[in-house]
Length: 82
Image: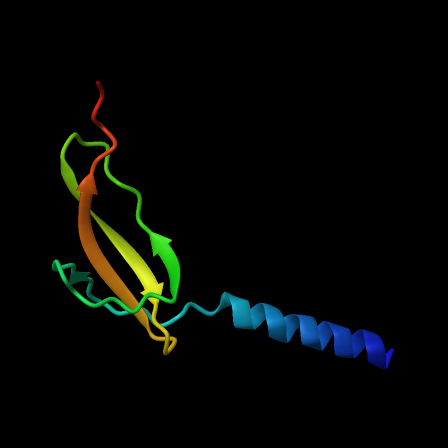
């Protein structure tokens, strides 16, 4: 019985750790050419808009110190056809 209780407690504790959202910077920093980026792990990249031209996207990443950052940059949208 103690093993089942311990297993249930361990499972609950591990699931609650995964359910917590990481602290994310509230504002995205616009990318500038030559900017030094310390990207250790990419967390998320927003999808590009369906337009034919430059469109902003945001990349959420963690640096080598474990801090989360949001970077905004432009890419060509997915709405262009040949």
